[in-house]
Image 1 (cartoon, rainbow, N blue to C red):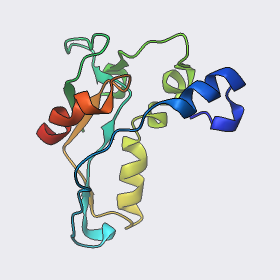
Image 2: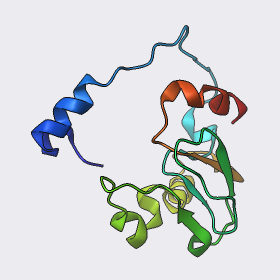
Image 3: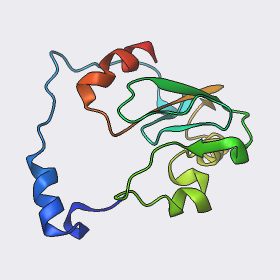
Length: 136
């Protein structure tokens, strides 16, 4: 993830002027301590199983990735000249930290890892993904 201070000035200025969505409420869920919770990944990296329907530009839907999916069968549909995919290509945990979650379970920091994980296309206006977020 690039830090804002490391982005070229023109692009940094443009990013700082982007409007932030406003929502009517802020969800808050009370529950057990983290060491007793089941954790699932929700990613905006447009990841999907190799045989899934590809995300198309601006699509506001999601893909389900079962936790037992072979890492070599997970691909990234998100493409942009401004997006460096080399980290993902070297280590899936960069944007889909499934192995790290299992390590946190082993350390007792989280209760368990969910059987299913979810991904969306991150280059979509947040308001367009509200229905998708509710479905997930």
